[in-house]
Length: 157
Image (cartoon, rainbow, N blue to C red; front, side):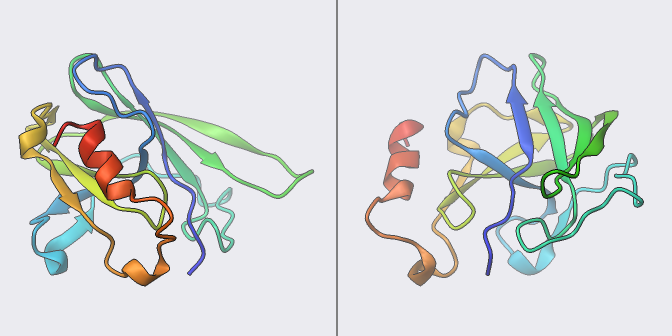
């Protein structure tokens, strides 16, 4: 499997430090039951005429988000990666996520990950509510560094 581009995430919430983590998905469902997890459905969608699918970008675009000072997740736009010299102009978006959902954050595509919950559209900054996981297939990971330990230490978990 080819590593995938992460989404872009700007964090303006002073209560959490997400440096070194990248957003790979916004999910809904019972996060503890992998058969009941689905992507969050924003009403604003990427432009289908600009989608550019290739091995490192299976969905053909990169979503951009911001966690606001008010602990809300805002979809801010879509980037459409292309091989040089081609350039595809990005699109702006402006949609607040609502309800209950999770952010799938990782140091890299194959690394350990943490699910960060939002309840009623608000980030739960209490890290005791976050769910830390090792990857499904640890044989893919380069074990020269233990990212899971680093994530746990990073969050004092």
